[in-house]
Image 1: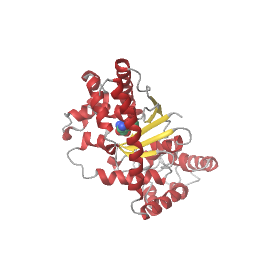
Image 2: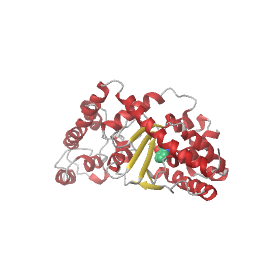
Image 3: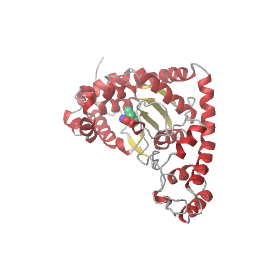
Image 4: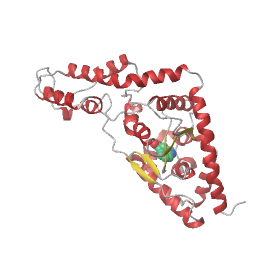
Length: 326
Ligand code: TRP
């Protein structure tokens, strides 16, 4: 069975953008692959080393949500990056063979240096972000890495580092392939990309009332200033959500109602709220069950960490052998 590895930085409660963009795909992949998913808390340090106060809480919240939507600890190895010390060991070894020029040329490196000026990212760790990511992937001898397009350049350098290692010391690692997912568009409440930093999210764990309030606050097609003005669903922030949560028949009716002004935005929103809450209700129920069993998430991470360390130890034996270390 092919091995799938992916991670997400700990950003706390999962919102619908994270879910449709990554986590849903992780859940689906469990059916056909040996999957290993982790919270990349060491990667969080590359930009947030000066204030680590949110990391632990964000890690536990994220994993609680992963479990609530169907990541299954019986089928997948679910763990926290920092609990697998071989990650650091392999990153150090891979750092030895990674030319600085490769790292300096990664487009996200320069972009982020510019954009996050207040964070002083002129550190060794930040430059080494892709080396650490390569260690995550290579440690599991992963074949497939489901990621968003934003990670493309990281995956490219990862493949280069792996090739260089295999070329120098022998074929220890498969060359990992990115698995880019067709991610549906998930706009935020204000029409920009849904993102925690824009404060425009709907979280998986929001209550039914919160979902209703947030949907009611969403910006719709500006053409529909009055109830009697016809609109265009293709230019409405709401409609992408109907694509995710409403049936084809319902969408056809909404489309017609919007274009003919037969259906008002408030009714359209109420329709979405009903469907969204129906879909989120089982997730909330599962979450409530998890939260009600204290220690459950920590137990999952403890046993996931144990499995991950055992798999990593195997790989590191192969690495030491290939490199003729004792
Ligand atoms: N860099 C990824 C992100 O920001 C997170 C990540 C870290 C990752 N290590 C990984 C993803 C290994 C896939 C495989 O989203």
